[in-house]
Image (cartoon, rainbow, N blue to C red; front, side, top):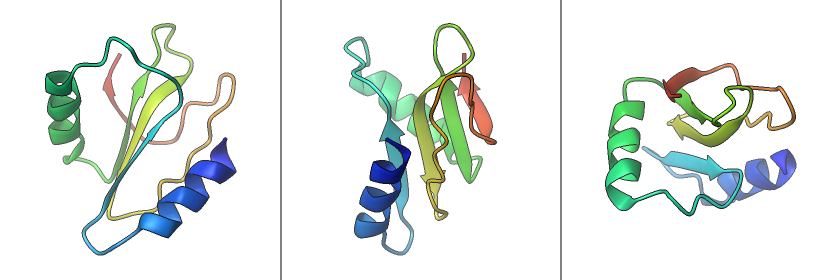
Length: 84
């Protein structure tokens, strides 16, 4: 999973880019919520939204930096949380 996200992010990278990695299907995610969280994420170079249990990540966002995913059980990325 991590290597696939890194490869995809590198393929699509361009100046002024924002990369969003979503680990799983999020059927309850609404466009308004996504827009709100992406706007809030601009305050940080990397940020994430934790899963409901608070030990994993559902969405990882990187602005003008590499995505640097570290998905796995109990492995929250070293970034700034957007919401919990």
